[in-house]
Length: 118
Ligand SMILES: [Zn+2]
Image (cartoon, rainbow, N blue to C red; front, side, top):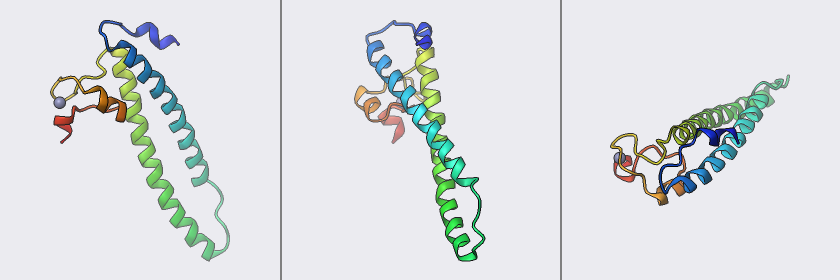
């Protein structure tokens, strides 16, 4: 729990942010293991059969898309964790207004308030 040492509990949102921090830490772990699985699948041996190879290539395209999406989500999660640690979490990175708790519950790594996201 070393991260909490960096947290400055300076507002009434701190408990909510602590919950989000736990959630995001778990999500980070999940995404890292998902990425490892995808990478393992992508580097596995190709079959010698050419019909099989076509299917394998199609699967690889799907995997690569998933890999890209997972990487982006992981970046968002990590940047949200940094914002919590810096005490900037919950503020819109565009206008500085507070992001609503409902929105943060639905999307814990949201960087924009609902107005700026539109
Ligand atoms: Zn905004």
